[in-house]
Length: 127
Image 1 (cartoon, rainbow, N blue to C red):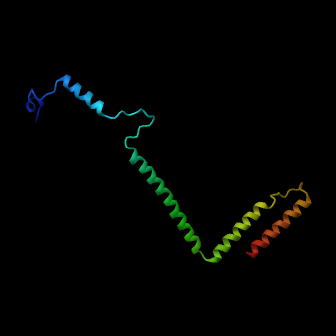
Image 2 (image 1 turned 60 degrees about the vertical axis):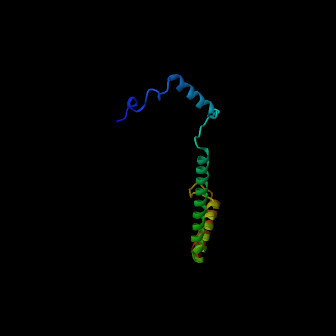
Image 3 (image 1 turned 180 degrees about the horizontal axis):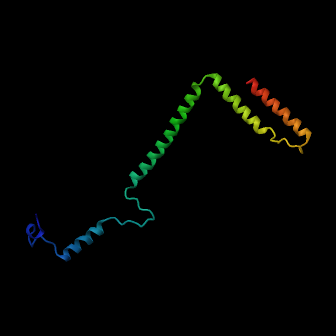
């Protein structure tokens, strides 16, 4: 094993004064860094990483959207029409009044609800 006593001569070793002078010169030559709230050691690679993650995220969204559109376009027209009718019925059911049958409710409201229910049943049977 090499020890400093056997490897270096006495003349090769630095004195404390020369060591302090050397480190003062090194610190003077280093660029002064202004204090910042967040210190990022390697800004370039940090920003490249952020840019790459955004690009990857948006390209993944594009690929998923394209695949969904391709699947939707490849469906037969019967399935597309069926989905359109189902969404139309769903919207129509939202617009119909939600009146419960009770003994206290008006007869006119019950008649209106029964007519709407018949219309929905007819529409459903037609589809």
